[in-house]
Amino acid sequence: MKQSPMAPGARILGLGEYQPSNILTNDDLARRVDTSDEWIRSRVGISERRIAGPEDTVESMAAVAGGKAIAASGIAPDDIDLVIVATCTQTDQIPNAAATVAARLGISAPGAFDVNAACAGFCYALGVAADQVRAGSARNALVIGSEKLSDWVDWTDRSTCVIFADGAGAAVVSASDAPGIGPVVWGSSGERADKIYLRDNKYLYQEGQAVFRWTTTELHDVALTAMERAGVDPGELTAFVPHQANLRIVESIARKLGAPQAIIARDIVTAGNTSSASIPLALSRMLERGELPSGSTVLTLGYGAGLTYAAQVLEIP
Image 1 (cartoon, rainbow, N blue to C red):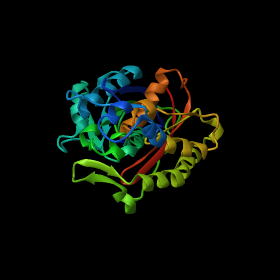
Image 2 (image 1 turned 45 degrees about the vertical axis):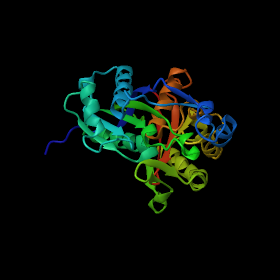
Image 3 (image 1 turned 180 degrees about the vertical axis):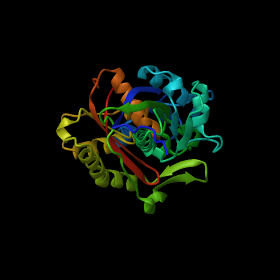
Image 4 (image 1 turned 90 degrees about the horizontal axis):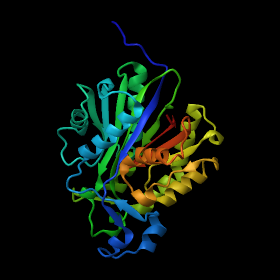
């Protein structure tokens, strides 16, 4: 049996993102439900979020973000042979988003599948893509997190409608002579899966206090393990880019890492919680703003419904 050559490492070649143009502020929400700008900022740290229009779908947003990532990577769409879309907000289960997105981008006959690990989805998908590249099963992979959470929000529930938003982020992963994506450290706490679920099979609901306790007391160990397996000391981190669920959660975990020099992604302030899209979206925006020079060492940490979690160390292209 002839085996494709294995690569010693995998790395990100390019990043891209998409946000809808419609901005929904806290004051806008205060005219809909019993809330206020101060209440929202003090509890979740959000000042505004982007909400998709009827023309925006999981697939269309993914295609825009994916197209930008391919352009930034310097390779052609035909060089992509694997497409993975992380999403938990597909309206229809069939067909999957990945095959549709690939066709829209002119990617010919790639392996294509979706991953649903909720807000940890991008980290899961990136770990799978990196392993496929290292194993020789793919040359170049396009990994996208895309969510239209506004379709699943009860706009009369002030505990959830102030949090969630829409958008997409993407990365192109390719073979590398040296590791550029560290081992993924992942897991789940299924006995607590009832803490985040669909109420009446149509509205996102979460037990906020239970999720807050879980994230702020347990997940910093996952992040530290990811650094250890990647051989990276906390003092070497350029940035910490966790899932943008809640600003208090982000800052609580960051304080426990022992990396005071690291830039902390706070994309949630203006982007809201975009689930699997939040990490690549934040990475792409930080890169555009010049906050992450080429070669930067970044720690990512995704966590969400399931309860699922995943962390890995990345090198910025």
